[in-house]
Amino acid sequence: MKPWYQTRTRRRSASVILLAFTLLLSVIAVGQTVIVDQPIIVPVNTLSVSDIDFLNATAPKLLFTIGMRTFPAGSTVDATMEIRVIVPAYNPGVEALYIKTRRFTIVSARSITNLDLGRTESEGTAVGPVAIETNRFDPDAKKWLENIALPSGVLPAGSYDFTVNVTPLIGGTSPPSQQFTIVLSNPSAIEPVLPLNGEELMTPFPLFQWRYEGSASLSVFEKLENQGSLEEAASGVALLTTVSPTQSYQYPIVGVRPLLPGKTYVWYVEGLAPTSGGTNFVHKSALRWFSVASEGGTGAVGLGAGASSLLDELERALGPKYRPLFDQIRAQGLLPESVFRLNGKVITGAELRGVLERFRSNPEVLTSVELE
Image (cartoon, rainbow, N blue to C red; front, top):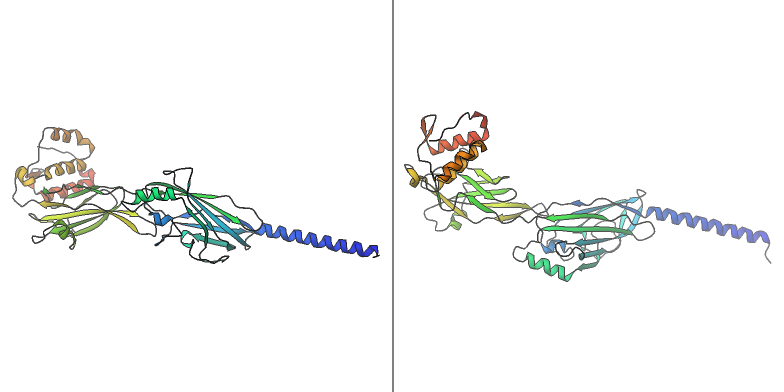
């Protein structure tokens, strides 16, 4: 029979070991806490089906970055991540895409982008890509997206809702979900407005107009006599290429090659929509052409269809104050002549355009207007 004091000593030792083990587990549990920062989103207007099928993407583009930190700072945590994507336009109650990663390690802090997903088979790495354990793209949702994207190659416009969960593997508590939305606008095809197709203009400084929400690039080419098509003319060297943040651009008086009377010109615009990866998705308009009237033309023949364009420019330059006057001119079917006078002096069409340009930039110089 063992002495009573030996039994008490062993019990006390066991209690000390149990207490130390409990304290150790508490420290580990605290160290397993993860803080997930608000994801950083790359602004995009268009995406393809491949862009959101991260595991099978052939040319992946950066869409988001998810930052994580451990608490207390400096601790190490093994965790997994789940990403869910819902497309409300398809079905707000269905996960179109579900991804779960394999185990990865966070040492103090770590960031994971969509480019890191599914690029390796390794587990538990503290840096670099993260392997995907589950990649479930709902087949009906994928088919629906592909059918809509087939003509243009881009996903339908609307919101794509992402939910991110990070779960520590040992102890600790899971941080709250982080949610973000990528909204695609998919700007529609760009539409040229002025000059009208085939229009004969009375001025070498036309106003170009188009319909498009966003910045656009305008290009103007001369159509040479030996060029048989608009496409051939537009494949040459442009007289002018410029980017405009608005839906119009006035051909400048100086700084570029002038448009010449009797010549034919081809133009088009390209709408620029930012995509993932910092590039631009280009919407190109159809080709349009116009000519500049030969010198010496008179009346409506010399003006051609440019008369209506001139009235529009006059109205824009003079402002809404004179709108009733222009409404009356159009109602009576009146057209401007080829002779213009400013303060009683005859001026050319080019000089008139210059005056209009000055009015637009400094409307205070205009004191009175008289139309004959």
